[in-house]
Amino acid sequence: MDDKSSVYLIVFLGLITAGYFFIAKITEDKTEKTPIGYEFDQSETDQSGADFTVGGKPPVIEPRILSPYERSPEGGEAPKTPEKKIADWVLEVPYVNEAPHGIFTGPWKNACEEASISMVEGYYLGKKTVGLKEAEEFMMMLFEKQDLLHGSNSNSDAARTAEMINKFSSYGALIKENPTIEEIKSEINQGRPVLTPNYGFGLKNLNIPFLLSGSSYHMVVVIGYNDETREFITNDSGDGKTGASYRYGYDLFMNTVRDYDYSTNTVTGPSRAIFTFRKAAL
Image 1 (cartoon, one colour):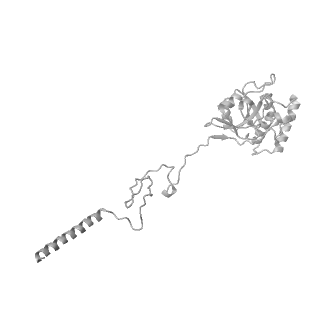
Image 2 (image 1 turned 60 degrees about the vertical axis):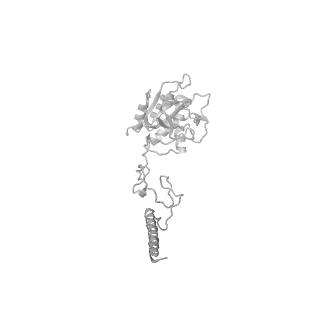
Image 3 (image 1 turned 90 degrees about the horizontal axis):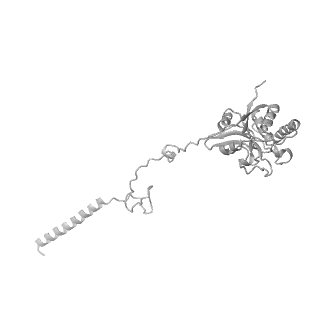
């Protein structure tokens, strides 16, 4: 090969080499390197569920504004929960069962009136609870007083119940004809429990052992109410399982508020309630 040909060959090879390095440089600049020590795996996902790409960069995640219930302490703001409204308005009336020892025999099978009087007595005396012995003695006294006055202590209507309260308890009572839901609630708002004579079967409380052959006359103490659920909260002495703070719907309850009728031995008397009050100090 002559000298001229050698020169041409060298120049040609030089151009090829330069072109190779130029193309490689352009390719390298267009491809971002994966950071050292970190490899993206196809199984990794971001918070939005989009897959990462091998050798690529994570997708940009747009910031999402969290609701007050999603914010975490890590973000500098404590979680918030909706405020729960407590709509119960309840008086602290101690509970007494009409059969303190759970035996529904003798006078104890018809002692809902005496138990109701006993509960409200405890309330006006400022007691949180009434012991079994104390309740039993107070109720026995009421049985004896009724036997002397009326010859019987069974099924005391509103008038006899109010009479017992006014004569033998520390608080007073008056009879309210045709009470309304709002009137009963008003008494509770002013701190005065209400006693109501009721048609027991109508209450539909399966925990009260009414006899099918009986009158199903009953009496409970209304101690509170809840306007959101439309319920009266009662101390029901006949329910030995869930009687304390037992709830009855407004409409169901008011439909059972009936007085006892001695002439027919049924609960077909007028709608009445016994409103109570604290006696003035002497």
